[in-house]
Length: 404
Image (cartoon, rainbow, N blue to C red):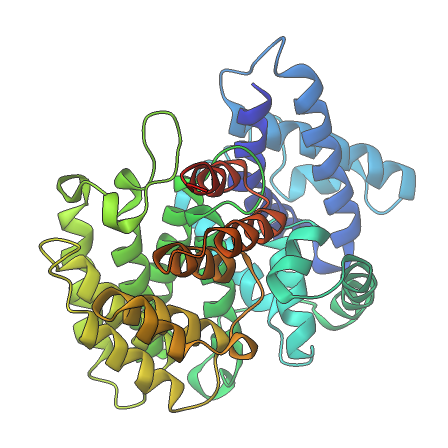
């Protein structure tokens, strides 16, 4: 049941923040955060012994009661205010359109133009994705202590700047939409590969990110090529969710996946959105990555993948500026159609990101070259970076497969 509380936290935290902030105002965000945290603390203690029949309703009711207590203590509002605001005991909070609209408004609140872009991203990850300081630090490649201080400063600015919010018009978008799309994709990627814990995938987070992005398309001023490219990318990636882990929860890499388990409807939807995205002459990194995902999604088998097309797309992405992750993924594709020796000649460690994916790639490459000791060293470094248990076990299996 503890895992179910963790799942509920990832799925419901941002919705609770959006719901109660929309009802009571952005200036009360800290009290709302505290109430939600206390609610989940109670869930951890109570659910294993007395699981609720309606977990979502339980979370909203308990959070409401926590807020009543906090507002009374702070003398912010009276009980009558709760009733006027629609929080009577028989209140129905299950309107999906209201939930999505509140969530979307909260995203744009976090991306308010008077906030610095770094503050926008920090607040979005905190309020909307429910990320802890360590997760944010990993996502942004910063120290945990620095992130905690930055979040504290950003929260103060948020309370003083954000009063109310509507979906912005096209002339007000600027970089706000870019940050909104980035936040949505960060939520998707956290669901696609959970950064910490025992389980690799949180499907609900992925699908909620897709639903939010599709909600954006209903606003003409937001329905851009970049948004359609993001939707294409997420649908292509989501099409593989059923094939990414085995029944025991072990990671299955692309070359070992059963493609009959891929979701054809999602692949077709991704192709539809990619077609709309490519009508926009300005290509973004979402366009590049969606096009690459399309090559994978439409390949009959791993062996018949058009690796040269993938390399060409990464080259196009790299032509607009250095990107260490593109450098790594290009090398992974290059290795599929070139010898280990030729691949090694392409490797420049300084150009690669320092993470578990780089060290797994270098371990695999050295294994192919027969350099067992070096391969084991790289795999061990990869484990040091990995935080997800399924990922650690996947790397440990690689170490175990090495023959001295």
